[in-house]
Length: 400
Image 1 (cartoon, rainbow, N blue to C red):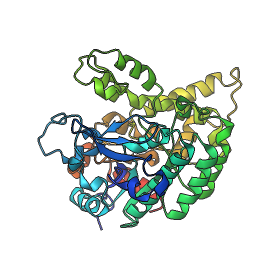
Image 2 (cartoon, rainbow, N blue to C red):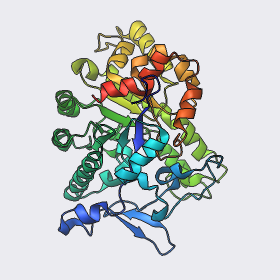
Image 3 (spheres, rainbow, N blue to C red):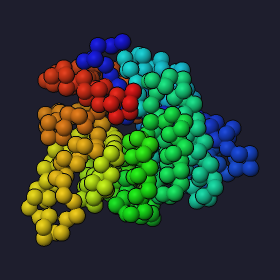
Image 4 (tube, rainbow, N blue to C red):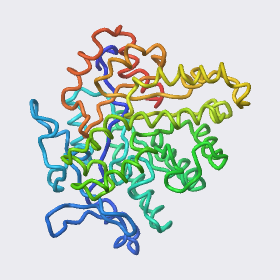
């Protein structure tokens, strides 16, 4: 066992859906319409399912962990064949070996691209309700089996689809029985046509999460700005898709801007959950902001408190507890590296709220050099606080 001050738990890593996952596990009558990985005439491997846009395997989310020491982050084609998927992203034995190589005690496992990173995309956009629900249940069952290879090290987060509150409640209660440790929900469900996150429609889900004791995660990529960005992307000469990443190389700055700024979108759902009173009505409810960084949090907390202290009377605010206090009680946030600003202001955010992550196997991943990255990043942080941020807070939140 590692010394507590040096123990590492990644609070935001990913698995990728196994290439043949749904073809073998969906009810037979649904398999031909369900998610499946096909090779197109031009040799690309693409996820398809009835009613959703084809999604090619992207290097950025499926194989970035294969980057060699000294290799440029962008030294690769955008798409990859299935043979280049890093095996640890879908095989538990290979995953545990990769974790050992990186010196990790445990990892919290978020979904891959077909899971929409927990947002409203991917298989969550399948229009047929029966097929959509079956695909989500198959994923959650497979994830539970994946984690059973090492339950104390592989911490799975389910997909529950907040846009359908009744289904979300039932699935949350079901996966709690499977041993999964939390769930991922779309931070901005109204962007998919559902009710906004402050809607009373989600009260049963908040109550169920409290009762089950499972944290709910809001992952980067659930962005209100994605719509306008997609529109701008479609207008560029070199990119006809709405995916900002397809504008790479167009000299528009869209892809770079999206990577830089999308984390700031998460300030919206955080503010809405606090100012709408959700967290006062559900004080045991826990949320995680994943992969959106932490440097922006101190400013947002101070700004929310300013609004509360100066303007709550004429605004007829419905909350009584200062927003920063609510945040420190009910939120955690993950980050990878290049977060000196967030660590310098860690006592404003709350040391208890911060959790380090490796983001394996995405382009942001610190694998397999996580220990070196952490040692450099935390050089000015006391060992007790480093232990909390790098492992202790995740152990407490996920009851490891």
